[in-house]
Length: 402
Image (cartoon, rainbow, N blue to C red; front, top):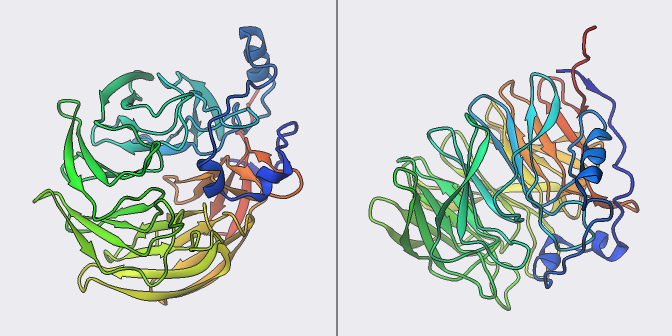
């Protein structure tokens, strides 16, 4: 894949300064206000917009979307908030092909949604759950089949939800936990792809949304942090055991947090990084959960506080942390062998509420999100981090040979 100098931010997507300065937590509780993007109603306008797309960029700038690495190494980016001023979700879906280094539009979601979750199933299909739609919280799932390039509507959950988690279990089922609609939720559900059905999975020890979940080596699932009414950040942690179908309280974290990350390490421990603290300010702390002892330990402080960032496992076991509210540009790497943090350089386009995907060659691609600074807006750009060189470079397509 060829990579070039960092592309500038997509022009014409500036947001109000108030949105630029606010964190993701504040915007998620705002009433849904649908504003039609100018110039996107007619088929002719859509065709012109797609034709005018600069190489290497998404056709639809977006935030609060999902990015899923398919079995063949391509990356499926679905939904999110697209080319609108505020509040409206998109159904647009695009695929990145590492072989060409470029994006292409594919069939859209059956329903537009943002702040949903996407999970790769054992058979290579992708399950999309929950999120916030144009004027509701969709209960029905959506399933993408890369073999046919088409979407189908999946079975409906018992409760629609946004700000939840979705975790693949060892037996191929998917555990969905918490989230919120008008109310915060403590219930969990399990999806069975064999018969396209949902079933109850008990209740957590408390209601929560914008928490995080990580699979443990023995098949259990660790759920951490989040927030609930009147509490901006929670220290609590729960564990779900799919063998018994029961929840139990785990030792609480040292720091309360929401909108953080939780990443499974090669040795089975879980690294929790950043997030919003009780005062709704980003924090710089990190800690590690050890399932063998059931205890937490300090993992040092980040170089800068951040929330709504990404944390991605590298092939060598280290973890790459990128972007986020509080520090949009700085990226850092945690080395579990030494327990230390190091600087991984700056993003070309500062961003938060973006996605990160591990590519087959060991690089990591971050996509979309809200760009910080005076020209803040939804981003259509992607960047790739190469652990071998330690460099960030913008996505650029392979040249066409004549």
